[in-house]
Amino acid sequence: MFPSLINRTSARANTSVPQPTPPEIRQSPVVYYTFLLIGASLLVFVLHKLDGILLPLFFAALLSVLLLPLVRRMEKWGWPPVWAIIAALLVMVAAILGLIFLFGSQLVELRTELPLLQKKLIVLFDEGQQWAHQRFGMDVMSKDELIDQSMKSFKKSAGGYLGSTLSTTAGVLSVLTLVPIYIFCFLYYRDHMRQFMFRFVSPDKRTSVLQTLDNIQNVVQAYISGLLTVIVIVAVLNAIGLLVLNVKFAIFFAAFASVLAVIPYIGILVGAAIPALVTLVETGSPARAAAVVGVFLVVQFLEGNFITPMVTGSKVSINPMAAIVALILGGELWGTAGMILSIPLVAVLKVVFDANRSLQPWGFLLGDVSELDESHQHRALPKLGFFGKVLRMVKKM
Image (cartoon, rainbow, N blue to C red):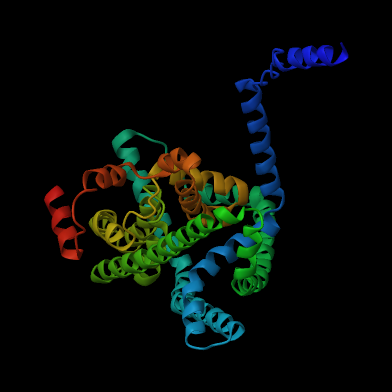
């Protein structure tokens, strides 16, 4: 009796209906995006509050990526790692001191010329007012009124200028002190930091992660070195054009405009406006000032259509809208240092987005549309050399 009862009970248990699994709780899109917005706001707040710590780290990280090939080459030659890093740092310091020596004399000369340029500017301003009064009937402002208004506005903002100058000077000194130390640590402990990152990855995925890290590092190195090469080439072309026009402080203005040329649209306007204004005040000839602007426009055309595609290729290309938004956000977040770091950091983010499958749409959003279309059109074509690329670009014009 009891064995049959036990068998029937076990049979019922085996044929019982399985319990349904609890339904999956789906989060509302409103809640998801609300938490995402709160997290982004907290991230911006932390980045702004920790600018004194993060800015030297970001500058040191970019410079470390730039110096890494030199350090590796010295290590292949048999140099100890410590001495290879120290030698690379000395090369960087020597390059910076050379730039300061190259432009320092022109900056001193420009400072001595400022009072004379100011007097000529006032005379030119008076002539422009007289022409506007005769042509359009506008009221003429006297020189004394202009000086008084300028002094009043300067007195109102003098405290802010003094505070910003002191804070900027303190920030620069702290960066100059900490950045070499951080660069040394990044380069010396690079393998240790890579092993630290592997601790978060399962062993079967470490090979793919290693390849992704190497790709990101190579692309960032190519972008930064290519960007510096483009700046040097553009500076040389600007200097040649300005020296032909016999513009004062040609070398300084050429280098200044070449650095600003990294900023799409805005950089060329600012870089050309200052030397054009100085030439107009110095010579009084609008034709000479227009010729200066023409030099920068021609060099900008060459840079956008020939120099940058040849040097940097299509490894990392940021569209102008993303670059301008990054500059504005960087300036609001970290001031001048943020504007300097904004373009390289966006380029690094684009490399990271392109390496991650789920983030590739954001990398596509940051990329340049023209180069993306060109890559799709020429995907099946054989790789062209230097002259082949030049001929292809000439045919498109």
